[in-house]
Length: 173
Image (cartoon, rainbow, N blue to C red; front, side):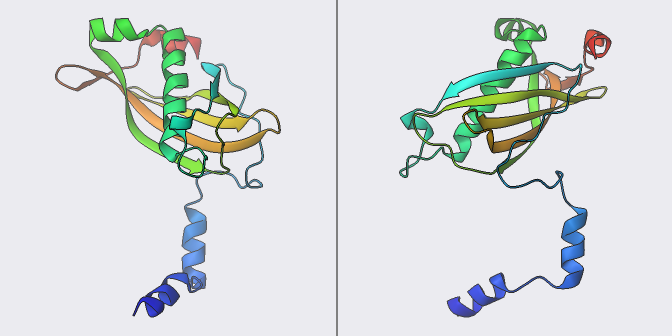
């Protein structure tokens, strides 16, 4: 029974399903793990260097999938400070950028001891939501290790009430 299940799982997709999957493409096609220029924009951007530590890796000494999200969280938090939202102010005002959705593609493995660059920034502004796009890159060869898009909203706590994005974000944009 396990063998037949495996065969069922790996059989080729029917032509109709291939067309459906093509419609759900989320990013432009590019060679796997190769760098592509981040879109130039007047929206806030950041580049942040991280070093892969032992605790960022699994038993094979490659970066664990959750470590990439932590690297991105660090860069996003530093960028928020540059946008006028330092951590202490968030705590004092009760207004926090909250992640609503994360989509990440793991393209190539990072390894313990490597220095990586997290680059990206705000890519979309709406009334109460905003989008960010980050890449984790190996600077030595330009290889993209992870490509991440997130949707966030500003949430007032307690109460978890969504608030409009500040007007100055749009003036800078």
